[in-house]
Amino acid sequence: MHAQQRKWMAALLLSAAATTASAEDGVSEDRILIGQTVGLTGQIAGSVKEMNEGANAYIAMINRQGGVHGRRIEIRTLDDKFDPALAAKNAQTLIGKDHVLALFLNRGTPHTEAILPLLMSAQVPLIAPSTGAALFHAPVNRLIFNVRAKYQDEVIKAVEHFTTVGFKEIGILHVDDGFGRDALAGFEKAMQAHQLKPALLAAFDRAHPDIDAAVHAALKADPRALIIVGSAATTAELIARLRKEGSRAQLLTLSNNSAQSFVSRLGADGIGVIVSQVTPAPHLVSSGLGQEFKIAAKASGATVSYAAMEGFVAAKVLVEGLQRAGRNLTRERLIHALESIRHADLGGLMVSYAPDDHTGSEYVELTMIGKGGHFIR
Image (cartoon, rainbow, N blue to C red; front, side, top):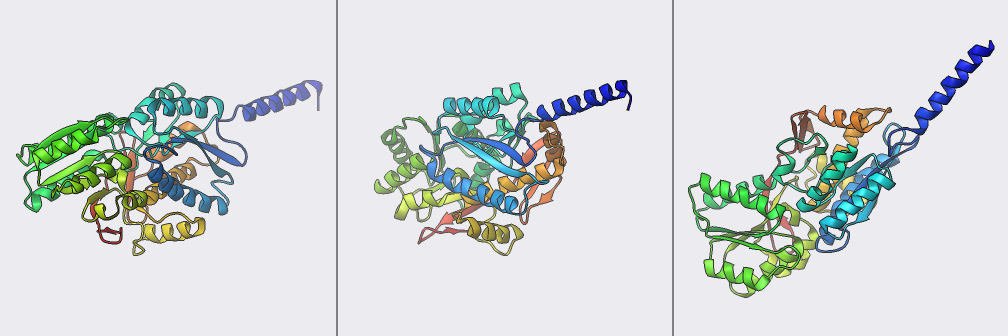
């Protein structure tokens, strides 16, 4: 080999080394690092615990099988205590310091709004935010891949159910933030479609809810049916107080309160409460998804609940995107890979994306809490 050829070869090797050294954030030879900021403590800790158990159950199963293209998936989770400002701070740490490939399964509408500027600045994708707010669906944000159905679809389904059984006096109690206002928009849309006037429109503060005022408003309006939109802790307290004060309204809350911990917190007050769901039943072994969830949950000791199933489904979508992205994994490849998922049946739940559609799933069904603390479909 001539001296000049040796120089060229050395330059090529240095270039290759530099390329390897500057590989995509979060991707190494044997690991894919994904970040999560979520309320491990605070108002939604019980739901988050179950949701993460479901996600970790699937990821553990994939890792036992060798990971994705030879790489194990690692989820680095930071506690934001259900505080939007802390969620943004955590996202900054995960992106700027820990150099994660993507963010995954955060929770809360104002929390997702808080981290959005960081996603845009660093061009980091977010997979499966646990929020059904319409603003993350339209206009389409190429960095956000929703999995769960929209809150407005849940509320519309609820109003349709109430009108079908003959209830016309329908009200809503909602948290006064992006989550609650989004649900309110769906409620007003549904009520207008059925040419009905709301029996009650009332809001409460997220951090410091005035339970007395909210309960008083509901009792005064005396609706036949009442939709309560809020965190598990606040919603459970409202339900307990309404029952104690003698309210006979048919109560309904949304899928963010689908955790078994929420049902346990309610106790006897929960019997008859309707809860909308965005996944098939976790114990439904007649479906492929249910069978797969049962095996993974048993192996990892995960709680068998709708909240855990949401995490499980979210992890399946993440892994599907990583697999489709191939061995040469980058954020851009992951985005394009997820957008290539068309009408994928996860075993009883359909998920689909396109460059102009990042909705994921539109699955919504209603369940009721029965005696013994079990959901009845």
